Length: 205
Image 1 (tube, helix red, strand yellow):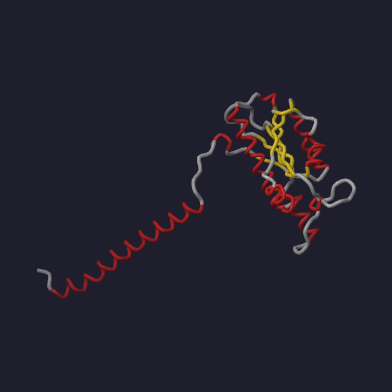
Image 2 (cartoon, one colour):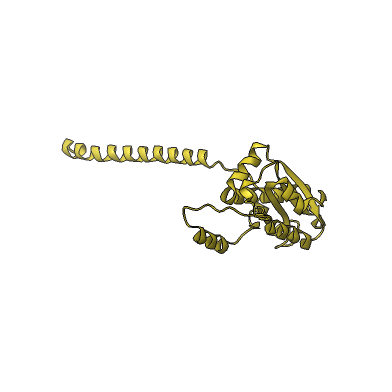
């Protein structure tokens, strides 16, 4: 027969254990809910998850950062010596799609989205003033087309030569096209006059 002393000495342990487990579960749920609220899960096209974008290598950015120092802000210059950040007037982004790949509408839309997001991130990091002006004017975007990968790469090279934001997407090749295919290049956001010098001759997609 269990005496009262043994039972009473054991009761606090079991009560404490139960409370500890309950509190832990509550805290875990609260933490999980907060994480879910801060980072909601979105449905994405998993076939495009491994797509890559290129604009400027990390080594190149690191070298520029070392040259500028922590307290200096880069002002990219355009032809004529004027800082790109001081440009005025309408701003836009163009998305140039490779028409020869014959991507489905959904695939092409996903690739354009990748390019637009990549260009946005680059602009936010390097040309925040231009990005803000583009956002204030409704974030205009135009989708254009080229017929070869060489033309796509030529567009990116022209954008770089003018100091414009640019990002080119390389597909993972899980669905419709071959791995390593370059699909879309984003040019801008940047001044209309400069962007048109790169893509103004192209036709709508």
